[in-house]
Image (cartoon, rainbow, N blue to C red):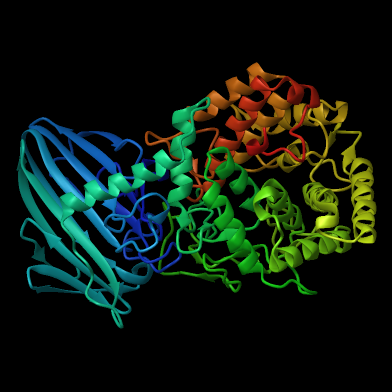
Length: 610
């Protein structure tokens, strides 16, 4: 059986982990406990890595899918010649948890409910858990009316309202659903040792309570601006990708979904990048998620700890872990036979000087909520400013994380400028007059050097690195952090060149030769066009990108411009954050004539201050 496409999947979350369910009712991904934990279902990256399907017996069916309103509870309706069946899937929230309490103590339970809508439909269940990315086949044992699967460090307990027939490490059933009848399946997870038996709560009550939990969060963060449905859905997705105990937002919930079929750029994205930090905070701020903004910054301060002479880490685990050493799972063939499958991510070892700017910009964004600066925050921000002043002349791996080579990336220098600019704006709150003067001198030196060495006369654009003629979409951040106005003559020329050379049907590649359009780059282009005064074109491009969402409003990292297929890890926080922030810029330039005259968002701008 061919693996379902990436975009065929729906996304379930419980504030600690995520599951992916394809259009034919198969759970092809679940790493219970935390996003980067070993899997119990991982067919998405290997046919033998486990799945759990509930679907009609016939192959002749059509599907309609949607989320229950303002939730991450998935509803799939199967239409067959004999009738219609509804399958409802949810990762359970803690009973009674509401608003900001959701996800902190989720019971690690996957609930599936099958309800007949019309006629009679024969159904089949195939339950095939495989622990630790397919390495471990569990023993299945019937005990006290439940089916237990135990193997290694993991234990699953399945309670079903239909009898299951056990085979070699798997179970199956067939049953007929009639209009008005319901069959429920509840699967609980717990570690094998030092933990009570997995919980198996009532399915109907759990689904209803989980739906209300998500709705309570949405009501607390009501957004009423333009493209409200898309912004609310993207905000809910980002919330679903938040590890609630710490507040950290992972880049994606999967590993090793390829940037190109048959390529080897397959990485584990179940971690937290400092690079994403400022953009994530701005997206949360725009959607009125102020408590999440504060929790995010608290998490970053704790993860970074005291910064002295050592390099600043560029990524962390959800609890702030630093060592994310990468290794390869050779037992898995990869998504659609596109190995390697990787666990861990060795980018944690890289020098990426742009992180100074992302963290400092985040602090400036929420400066009013950081006052007075706590001693640990004060030390962190001072250290980042001093690091930027010292390290900005160094080459680095850049935001695209080139492996084995470093360059003088223009976007990294621009973010160093941003770090120093925000430090100067903090002024006496962060340093003595001589410190502020030192940061200002370094800031001005960075700017002068970027304007000279980052510009290519031959190309007529700012390019990816110094003294290069190679265009790179990363330079589109220049207006977005306040380095240059979008309507500056050279910036306009850069925007045109990047769009002309790297864009295909609205999808912007990162560089020439990049196999697919990178969604956040496309949203950066929307922002740049809007800030440059081309608001109609910006809106047109934005709506072209919206048409690329899957049927549930989900984006992966990239889209193949030739086939329209979504590629890369899924769902991708960067893509949904890009959507939210692009809406913010579109809204700003349509409502604020002063902003239109600036051609860029002021560096001190925060939505809450307007």
